[in-house]
Length: 164
Image (cartoon, rainbow, N blue to C red; front, side, top):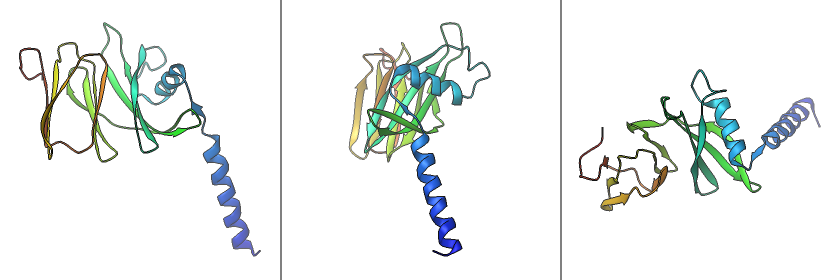
């Protein structure tokens, strides 16, 4: 083995070791602890953070956490992970796009994942290549994955008014 091959083998071994070192998160407490490390708020160590749920697709997962209590501003944090060993291995924090108060989405895995935690929201109306459909918001928080990127989507209250 020449010097270049030795260095290449060492780099491959190091990469494999570092990949294995990323810990597997397997509880809500672990998800929230990770969110505290990566959430872009100044008081991340003390702010209320709760786990909203996860969407899994093709060996990947999008975990959602929501920060802020009753009298605090809310920040929605989606974390991209790989499914691993009965839990999730963190890959990166995704940047959500806000829709209305306490609702956000992120483009992910060829579609769009929505996180809705707005008590005034009754429906998410999605228009895409398959037509228009309404998704009832019957629990909070509600995670919805749409397999395609919609041409349009809106949040509606119980009277059918668009939420801003």
